[in-house]
Image (cartoon, rainbow, N blue to C red; front, side, top):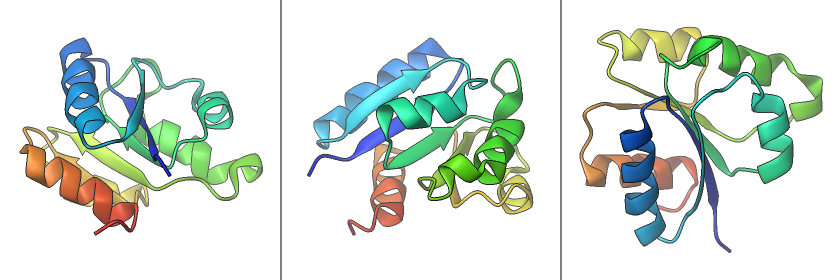
Length: 122
C-alpha cells in the first residue's frame, strides 16, 4: 500500500526536490507552503507521515505541531518529523515532542531512511 507524506516548507524548490525524490521511492507526496490549516490538511489527505519545516509562515512549525498534538480530533496523528536547517533542531524536536527530525541540508539516503524508519519500513 502506498504511503502518503505531507510536506510543509515555504521553499518551493525544497518542495519540488522532495516530491521528485520521494515519488521515485513510491511515496505519494502532498506539499503545502503554509501550515495554519494543518488539522484540515491531515483530515483531507490522511498522511502516513508529516515533514514539518520550523520556519514556515504564518504560525511556524512548532505551533503547528502543538496544534496537532493537542487536537482530540487527531488523536492518532501520523509521525511528525522536523525538517529544518536550524542548528538547534535536536533540542527543538524534543521540546515539541516531534517523532524525529531531518537536518537540512540532507542526503537522499538520510531523508529516505529516516522516513522509512518512522513508517516502520526498514
